[in-house]
Amino acid sequence: MEPILRSDSKTGFLQEAAPANSTTLQVKSQQNRHGTTGNPSTYQVDMSSSPRSVFNPDDLSVLESQGTAQRFDGTVRVRKWVIQSTHPSQLLPQDDEDNVWCTLPLSLHSLETYEYLGFSPTKAAMLWDSWSNLKPQLKILHDRSDAGVVPEHSFLGHAMQHIRVRAGRHDPGGLRDDWFGTMRRWGVKEDLIERIMDTQFKQVRLTGTAGSRVLETFQDAFNLLFVVRMVSEQRGKQRRAGSGDGQVEGNMAAS
Figure 1 (cartoon, rainbow, N blue to C red):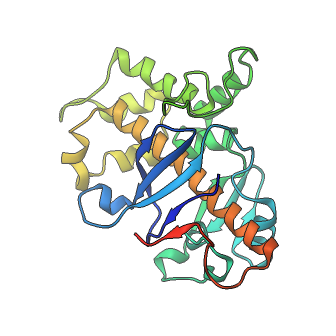
Figure 2: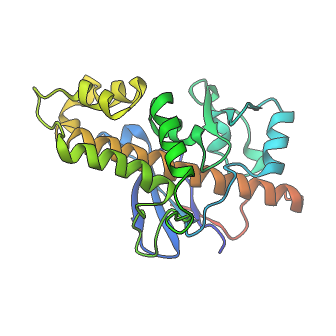
């Protein structure tokens, strides 16, 4: 299955997933998600299996040699514009905002990914330990079923179930409810709590609950890793093929 891309100026958040062996992800920028206009990107990504690496090894090596990626123990710091570019010839800074660094996990199923999703280091370590020690017959290694459902005992499902169980006992949804304290007790990291509680988006937040906002963010972040991986694989293939025409052959359609 070859990925189908529709170009977009910003890579952001999952909006929609169609049921299929290869899942269609429609992605919008964070600004669009909160009410501004813009054209979404649609990505055809194989989520029926779970790749170990977020980045193509050849692609990552080249990015490191160019000084646009820095590998650490379990994570990689990469320029923001790198993960938004499909073709090697497009790896040029677009503006100052796009030239900032972001940190992503190296491996899709890892302790670092649980932290990246939005758990505190302590809670991420507990979840990683419990998922790693699931009985082999219970552990599900793919992250989507054919119906687009996140299996409970998959890597992502394990994290989501942690929140669902606790939200089932108490899930703030009102203006006067203790959103901050509840999310901290769930093990959500402060950075994510602050983003969810941003007063600029109060009206959007109050259309859901603390649990729904946390789960939505987890899925957005996790599915973005699949998009990053797909884009990195495309660059790796094109480098190996020696392509230099600036086009993703047969895989890019104008939105």
